[in-house]
Amino acid sequence: MVCDNDAIAQMLIANNFHFEKNCAVLSITGYPQSIFDTVMQMLRRNQNLTVYALHDASPQGVRIGHQLRAYRNWFPDITVSIIDIGLLPRQVLASRNMFVLKSSLSASEAKQLPADIRQSLSAKELRWLELVNFVELESFTPRRLLQVLTQGIGRSLDIGSNDTLIYIYGDGDDEDTSAMLFASESFG
Image (cartoon, rainbow, N blue to C red):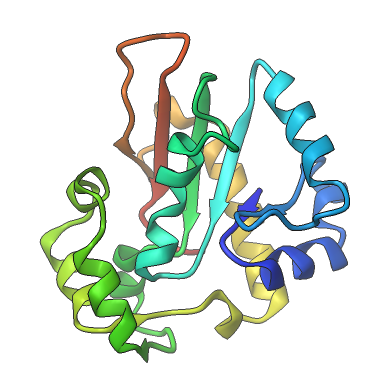
């Protein structure tokens, strides 16, 4: 599980999510620093690695799949499935029950999203991000986040026949270096 901020990773670890789901919990910024490099070495040796990305509905958040796939310190040279558990703008737009915040910084960052990320988002999602909207995972209770993650992981176990997950992007041309990103249509 890779989170877009340390606070969410800390919350998951504090709630023993890593023990219950038998998975590493890290943040995109390298938390927990004391074991990050060791954990990454172990993950890169896993031939059947599935990475779950958990993030805010924000321009920085929707970048996490791209970062995991493209950045040298993550998983650029191995076959890995990346499952975006959320929070995506499409999930916020479908729900209408989330606490939406505004940030002028969000608008400029939304306009600077790489082309492959922009293509994975609908025009409505891009417009929502460019209108300075974002939703933080911290607006959910820990209990709710743990429920959503458990459900998301459960739904992801059979991607081939599960229509609740959608393929976002990835290059499947080279089996040795391909990566795929899937995302759930709903958040919880």
